Length: 206
Length: 206
DNA sequence: GTTAGCATGTAAGGAGTTACATGATTTT
DNA sequence: AAAATCATGTAACTCCTTACATGCTAAC
Image 1 (cartoon, each protein chain N blue to C red):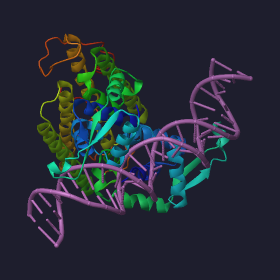
Image 2 (cartoon, rainbow over the protein chains, first blue to last red; image 1 turned 60 degrees about the vertical axis):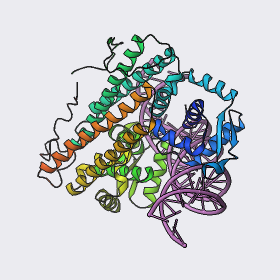
Image 3 (cartoon, rainbow over the protein chains, first blue to last red; image 1 turned 30 degrees about the vertical axis):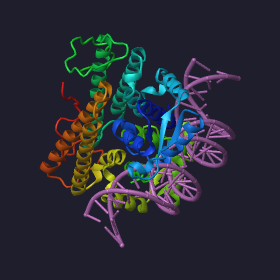
Image 4 (cartoon, helix red, strand yellow; image 1 turned 180 degrees about the vertical axis):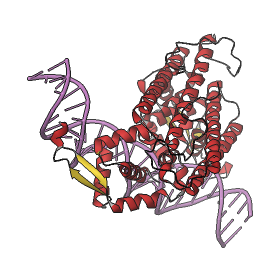
C-alpha cells in the first residue's frame, strides 16, 4: 500500500461517513488519522480529482455556497462505485497493511472492517514489529562499543517497539474475546480475558 | 534539516570515525542511525559524489582491493575541509533538529557535540513533543464520538509521546548533572562522560 | 557453472512539497 | 484597511525509489 493508495483509501473511508469538501477532509485526515499530519492541498486536490475521474466520488457545487458565507466550495460524496471500491479495499489484506503509516490508516477504519480481517492485520503488524525488534537486537550485538547516547537511542527504540507489541496484544485479545463480528464498542480498559496469543519472541528477558 | 542534509551530515559523521567505502557506510547508516533504515544506493552514491565534488571527502582506490577478494572498492576518507564542515554543523542548532528523523541523527553524534548544544537539542525536541501532545489532545476533544479502535490508536499515540518525553527528561537530567562538556572519543569504552540512567538495559513499565 | 553476496553506479519515473494564483468573508 | 481564515487549484521543483548495468569472488 503506497502512500497514494492509502490516501485514496482514507478519503473514501471518510466520505463513507458523510459528504465533505476538500478543506474539511484535510482537517479530518489530520486529526483522525495519524498518517497525514502534514498533508498538503497539492496532494489532496489532485487525489480528489483522480477519484472523481474514476467515478468513485462525485462533486456537488454548493450553489448556495453563499449561504455559509465562504467561497463556493465543492462537496464530494461517495458514489455507489466508490462505496463498492471502499468495501473491496477495506476487507482486503495486502502485505503492506502492516507498515507504519498504512497500519494506522487501516485501524482507523476498523469499525467498517470484518473481524477476521482485523485480526489478520493486527497479527501481521505484530509480526512486523517482532521482526523489527530482532533486527534491532542484532544490530546492537553487531555494533560493538557505542557511546551512551547512541545506546540510549537504541534502547528507547526497543522500548517503544515492545510497548507497541503489548498494545497490539491487548487489541488482539479484545478482538478474540469479543463476540461481535463488526463491533459496537470496545472502550473497556479492563478486558476480562487476556488470551496471550502466541508470544513468540516478544517478551524475552535475557 | 532536510533529509538530504541529514544524510550528508551522517556520512560526514561516520567517516569522522574511520574511512569507509559506500557499502559499509550504508550498513552503518542502517544499524546505527534509526533514520536510514531503508537507504538505497541510488541515494547514497550520489551523495558521496556530491561530498567529493565539494572536497569534503576524498576517495581512495583500494589498489590492493584484490587483497580482500572483493571487487575493487572505493574507500572514502574525510578531508580537512570535511572535518571542518562537520565540526561546523555538529555545533549548529537549526530548528529542524527536533523533527523526528533529524533528531535521531543529531543524537547519534552527540559524542562529538558540545553539551550546550546537546541540551538545546534535547530541550527543543522535548518542546516539540509537548506541542504535539497538545495538538493530539485538542484533536481528541474536537473529534466528538469516535469508534474504539480509533480511540485506541490515539491513546497509544499519546502514550508513546509521553514515554518519549519521559525518556528525554532522563537524558536532560543526566546532561545537567554530568560534568563533561564534551566526552572522550567515541570508541573509548571507558569514557566517564556520562552514564544515562538505565539505558542499554531497556526495560520500562511492566 | 550457477547462485548469492559484495560493490559501484546511472537513468527513468514517480510522487509529494512549495510556491504561486485566485477569491470571498470575518475579524481586528 | 489589513490580516486571518476559509477554499480551491496548478505547476515547478526537488528528491527518492526502482530498475537496470556491470563485475568480482565465494560457495553450492
